[in-house]
Image (cartoon, rainbow, N blue to C red; front, side, top):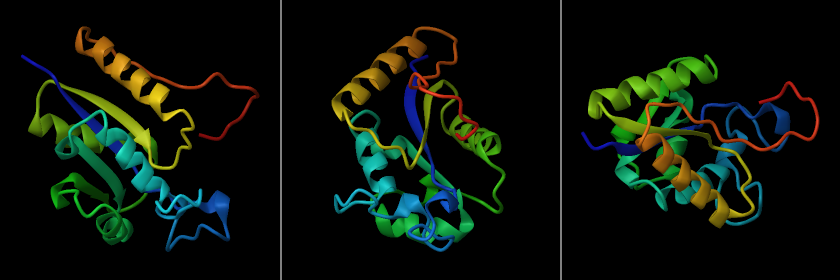
Length: 156
């Protein structure tokens, strides 16, 4: 069976590390932190639309932020905005999204991404994600992509 590619954008964080710019009412993923006229969430969504069909991009967020997501991403189908009743961090978010994807498509390749990463070389990023999707589509594996650390850090 042919695989389909999906993207899950995690957008439920409260953005406490960027206070006072980022608040619990408007966390950093919903703010134009870079002065580009788009929020970090919008930039992430636009980046993945180059790789994955818009209908296969899901946003996981808090119930509190669903309206913000829909305002900032009006083209996203409401069924593709998955809300969590309470924050439970990364693993439950990923599990929830994958459960929904599996109910839609049994054999899917899934990219999980935060909504608030800064990607400078977008062309290289897109190429790396496409290469990674090609790799996992031919194998039954889990692939992680990251950056080489420059120092120890307990943060995400």
